[in-house]
Length: 109
Figure 1: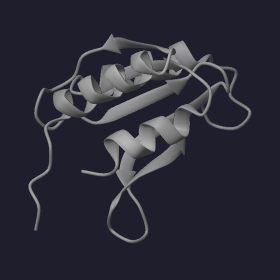
Figure 2: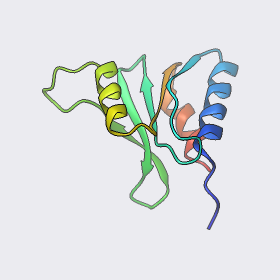
Figure 3: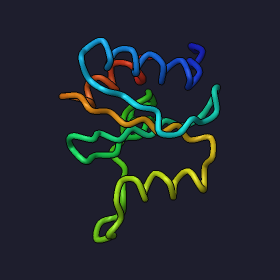
Figure 4: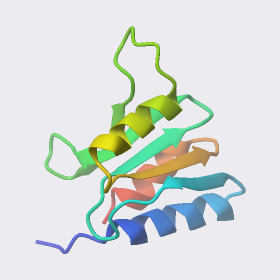
């Protein structure tokens, strides 16, 4: 069993990788440093991704977001989620292939 990296380290690594590749990554909300969930907003694709557990039991990115048919912006969605989970990290990404960057960085611990 491997030790899980703290959320703030995973977020910091993602910010650095995106910046080094010429993209923009912004922390919209800071969560719990150790065990906060991580929600990613892919600004280019209008997509919400969340770090969770995949079917194989390993960390994976899971598509999330407003329910189908619900007129809710991405900002409204993550703010509503933060009200229920103040430990949630919210990171906005503006880079091509944001999902790949995130998966390589925060799912391979």
